[in-house]
Image 1 (cartoon, rainbow, N blue to C red):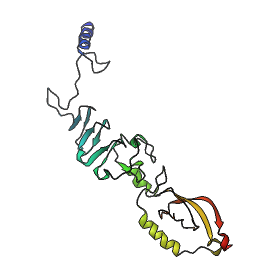
Image 2 (cartoon, one colour; image 1 turned 120 degrees about the vertical axis):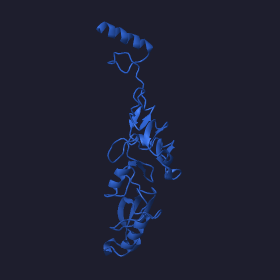
Image 3 (cartoon, rainbow, N blue to C red; image 1 turned 30 degrees about the vertical axis):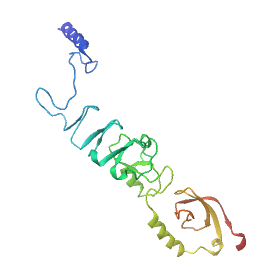
Image 4 (cartoon, rainbow, N blue to C red; image 1 turned 135 degrees about the vertical axis):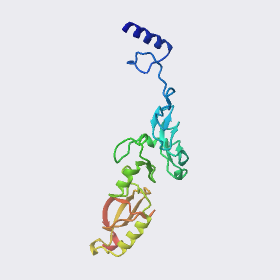
Length: 221
């Protein structure tokens, strides 16, 4: 009996590749959505390229990504430079970075390209998982990689203008200036020091960092 089975396995091996090295019956395995014998449905969705079986979630296979993604397909486009499928409302409206999807999420340090969680594109072009982005906003507003503002802060900057105007500095600090570097426009400027924030003279952002020592204007000494 054992000899007969081995011979049958050998004949099957001549006909083509088997399912795996442990499969000695010699039958050819063919992945498909429905059983040819009993018509059992193995998965509402089946990809013949990825051999993925799943419930229907409007999935589609993206040839450029090389994997199946949750759709519907018409709601997404593939950005060739970013190398990732993105929402249609971002087409032509996001900053591209070459193969940015191949980087891990800087918040959770997990893969972005193959994740089932939708990627969120920051204004600077870096990617975060949508869920990680929402958690990040509870603690701060800047990209963890480049410190660029992660959303439109212009309304908050105007509120900060009012707070600065209503909070005069002590006399010993009123004539003090400081060199700053803006994280949003990367510009450098010299501005009046204020404890609440120092406003960029170029783009009017308060997302700045001190780039030099404080000093008092000579004509005010």
